[in-house]
Image (tube, rainbow, N blue to C red; front, side, top):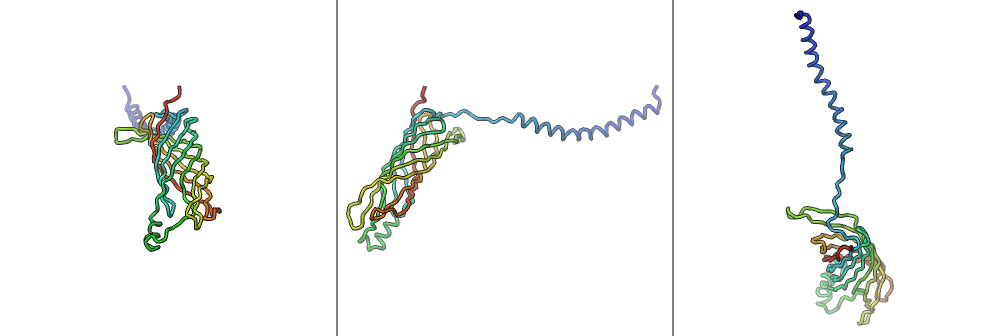
Length: 242
C-alpha cells in the first residue's frame, strides 16, 4: 500500500513534468528550424534542362526585311540575307548583306511640297545609302522557354553581335545631276532574338546600329553617321552534323 505522502509526491512530480515539457518543446523549435535551414541548403538543386534545339556545327540562313527609321530625310527598307555558322552552341560567325530601298521621309515631302512652292525646288542631300554588307561575331549566351497559348512551350535564345561592314552610298556633288558612287567602311553592334518553331526553322528579330564616316557634297568627311536597323526574318537550319 502506498502511503498518502508517496501518492502526493507522485502527483506533484507528474504535474511538474506537464509544466516543464512545453518549455522544452519550445526550446527545441529554434534548433529544428536551424536544422531545416541547414538541410535545405544541402538539398538545393539547380535544375538545368537540355536545349531542345541545338545549333553547334550547323549552318543558318535567314531572309529578312526591316526598316531604318532614324534618318531625317529618308526611310530605308532593307531586304537581305544573313548566314551564320555556329562554331559552338553560343558562338557564331555571321555574314550579312542587304539592298536598301530608299523612300522620302515625311519631313522631306513637307519641305518640298509645302515650303518650297509645291516641289518647285527639290531637297538635295549630299549622301544616301544603297546597300550594306559585313561580317561579325554573334554571341548567344541566353536560352530559355516559356508557355504559349496555355498548351505550347516556346523556345528562344538571345545574343549580341559585333562586326565590321562596308556600305555602298552615293554622294551628290553640288550642281551636278549624277551622284557619285562610293564605298565606306564602318562597324556595327546589335542583338538577335530567335523564336524556334521547329528544329529547322526559327523566327528572328534583329537590331543593328551601324557607324560610318558621312560625306558632304564635296566628298569631305562631315562627321559620324549612325543608321539604326530593325529587321524581321525567318531562319532555316541545316541538320545537325553526325
